[in-house]
Amino acid sequence: MQHRGQESAGIATTDGGRVFVHRGMGLVTQAFTEEAMRPLVGGLAIGHTRYSTTGGNTLRNAQPFVLQTLHGPLGVAHNGNVTNAPALRQHVLERGVGLSTASDSELILQLLAAMPADLPRGEAGWAQRIAHLMTIAEGAYALAILTREGIYAARDPWGFRPLCVGELPLDDGTKGYVVASESCALAPIGARLVREVEPGEIVRVGADGIRCWPGVARRPDPALCVFEYVYFARPDSVIDTQSVHVVRQRLGRQLAREAAVPDADVVIGVPDSSLVS
Image (tube, rainbow, N blue to C red; front, side, top):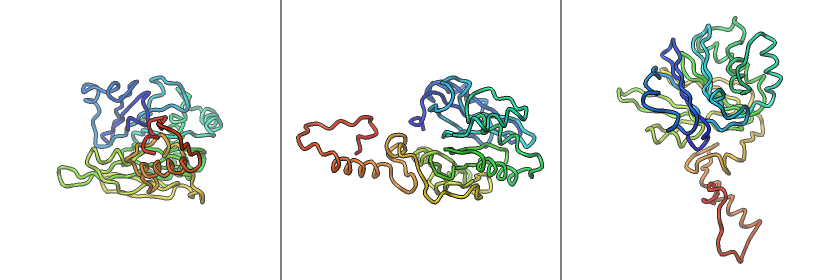
């Protein structure tokens, strides 16, 4: 998923009790070495490549963000932009919780960790915490949330950012599961696309398979960011059941109808994502 962010990269893992994390600046190949990967043990992991929309381009803002909580390890990888972050930030600070960055992704982490303690522990508790977060966070978010029970995926009710679930056959004959922003990340590791996370939905993947819950009501008029099809996504991805490659070809045909240049000798795509059009 290098194409979705080139500023920094990070991976967080858990063995069920401890959480391990490594983050570095630049491309994945610059941020990670074999030595850096060695301490990242455990059967659950989330990763992130950053294209900043909130907070500066510094290692402090690199994701995933991680914490130890009363309910075990917690990690968050976030793609999007929480538009009411200033109000939520004030709410967190007034409760005596400090924040070390201006990132809305760290804010999401602290909001999840600081939910009421009377919520049940384990799977049901995290699902309720995430659902509550989805009622108060506005804007765009596709989340991968690391816990000791499994990895939770959540998508905002507008579906601004894509999120999908894949299935990975393991050497011992069992199945593993993958959550990714785009389906193009699945085939290179031998996984297959199972389905996309619906707007407003919470999905958990773990040793017992896939479970899902309603987070918040899906908007009647979903609004996937147009830049996904035009620029962000890789052409071999499928987003909201549509092939990105095919959508770009259709956009190219429509552009030719609306802005025909009959005497042109050469048509040059800018940026490169427009070449398939």
